[in-house]
Length: 376
Image (tube, rainbow, N blue to C red; front, top):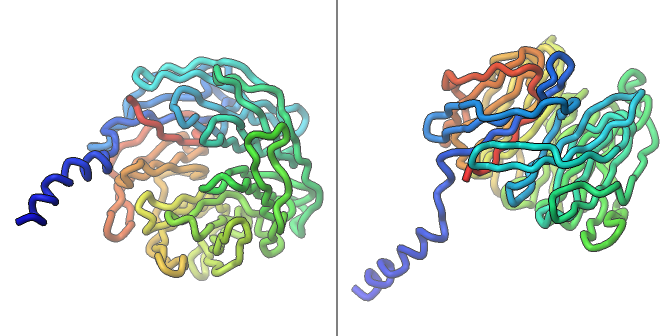
């Protein structure tokens, strides 16, 4: 009886410690603005039905092809992906989640062709991967959410065996490790993943780690990264090789465990590995493959070893699935098909990890990035 009373007393505390995921989310959509002036779109996403409703959009923002949302939900940051002949930039926006209102605060120049942006948990810095320029830029953030001029730029050098794609450095991703002790950035041009220590309080917050990089096989072209739920394993998707690589992470000292192809055996389709995400429950990994494959590939993650087992490959309902996002409860996966101008919603089976289209789609010109943030 005493044990039962104790459990009853603890029950309310347990409920408080495990809040339910929000019923509504804001979906921010980054795009290329080649054909239309509108840049970032805001939609309300209803988690019980997977339905999307338009709220707002920006105008006159050049190619905000990748976004990140500040942890407090009040600011949004984007790259302005302008290519080789012009210097790109990064932009800051104020954001009101309840109504989806988004307004430009300021811009700062970055290296050429920025294609990825991320922010630290304390909102002290943003990091821009400049693909065309082959560099990484670090920008301090002010309390009002605006971006200060870059405080540090790291220029990569080198090339790879693919003369058409790897003629020089092409930095593609810049993201902090889960504990934010390290920043990792991929270089498609040199087949390397670079590792820097992050010291948020310093003027130049990045210093080379030891080791300062590790290499993928020549011609793979590393693109995006994600970590296992327990932070012990790291997964890298390669763009040209269309493989997923599994590593032990070990506090910034990765060791390769596995290399799995995203392509079906004997397939003659053109490959183009793009995005990669681990499900919120840590049981599954999803990766998009562009080219003529236009698939999202599903793998099971072995919780003990970190190894991947193929489950299925699923058509993305469009052309060129550049980016996708999973809602915090792990119920839905949304994929942005850039060349077919649509976003498709899939229901996730929690037991198998398999995907089923739920019938909801959104038509948007050249969607390239999807980010969720709580609506309240």
